[in-house]
Length: 211
Image (cartoon, rainbow, N blue to C red):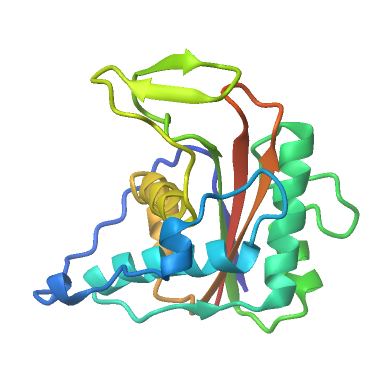
């Protein structure tokens, strides 16, 4: 059994040549994912999980890899609990203080799934589309933000949150390696929301691959 955990930055590169049919790879999501803003409460975890899996499979397709399927409710539940713990403690880490689920290996075992290998990506994303760019605060009370060019920066939809999170992971060699791992065939991702974070809140994400 092989398990890997990754910090926010990784040191090893991972390069996979894209196939000639990369343009045929789809990243289409449901209309609900594309048009629904992710709320601060009662997040539709299934809708986000589907949108993130679509993004993951888009990149795997471009690399000539098979799709990954749904890792199941047990794995999604463990991912959600870890995201909630990170949001509550304000710690971006793979090791928690949750009894029986403090490590990735314990979380996968607690999910009750069969596995030979596993890996985990974690991350933080602001609720509004302000990450990795210069922006202006138009009205902090009503959460109005804009780019320096005057473009409005709204709250993330399920689709934009999924694309942004996966792009962040794909731009990190270690996280990218997990996404493009030939040994995994299933993935589940869950998110928790911290409403007290600066700039009107922040999402904490946990993504677990198994194979």
